[in-house]
Image (cartoon, rainbow, N blue to C red):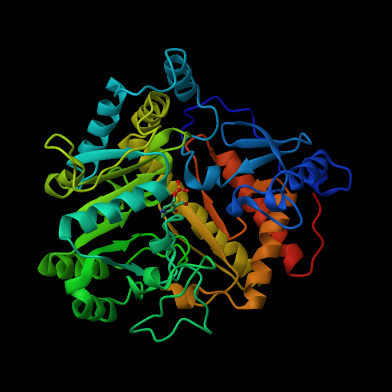
Length: 459
Ligand SMILES: Cc1ncc(COP(=O)(O)O)c(C=O)c1O
């Protein structure tokens, strides 16, 4: 992949276990954190037992922890940092803007620039509203769809993650014991104490099963404001949606006057025109986050002008009022613009090509090591599984205890040997990654699998 940021010459990935030793700096920090945060943690996603290494700095595709150990960053803050860490153009844009003031109770020109870029790239984007996170973007899209249709319920897919808004958390963690039938999956609380009314107002659908999903949408249509779908849903197994499945959702929502929302908080990574461009299906609204903020907190709801008019304050009280102290703050906007401008069609093409090669190499490693496992993904995204069965939906992706344990050992092995990935097996590429880094990644992966297969890992 072409190098867009200065890279240190790659080092072989080695032993990065110092954080785990008793008395390490990370151990001390975690002990201190436990006195001031529940479980020493302020972001559930980044917790790992018994405690995580603490980050000190990042440069390009490398992250250095507080012990001084360096890892290849294959997670990029959960896919947000598509140009890796501290890209000079993004640092320059953000610091230049920061020196002029961080936020104002007035709009700034930068928000128009980034909104215009999104309108130019995303087929569904005629108007844009910025938020500070993907969760807020999804919340506002749902509220916007309710305001547009005057209907209370939403439909979402079993196992799909859309952030922490009550309604979209429903059935995020369904299990074989409680998930119900495939035709009509049960609405299961994720956070204890979720009001029953929330569960009643969320219709849960099976991902990649067009017939069941359409039938359920038709049955619930007169109460449904929106169908929310992530076209490349990480928590469902990072299996891309079938195109005909997305087309079926488009057809039924069009026919029944339901707002189709694509959650592209992650999947904007898969194409210059988003997943919607790649699949050739245009939703009414799209939620964004992560890569559009250049590494700063961000989110956005974009959509068709008539739907987005629910947020328009010019005629008086909008149908869906939307505040937010830091919405479209100019530092995020400037950093986001710099990052998105670097993300040219060529940059996407290189990421796609490298992603496809990497997924094939990792799958070959599983086969070669004789370890049961698999790799899914699209574009610059990949996900490891502790099973070799075909993953097509939430239920087939759902890991049995031995599969989950295998994946956990593999990811832990990678963490201990110079590779940072999600504990759930999610990984992604960044533009500063070159061939040497990716070769080291595959070599390290093969070595970790050899260890899983019973051989000794030398580093
Ligand atoms: C598909 C999807 N939607 C929404 C969100 C929520 O975004 P944020 O973490 O910025 O609130 C995420 C976060 O990972 C996501 O993956």
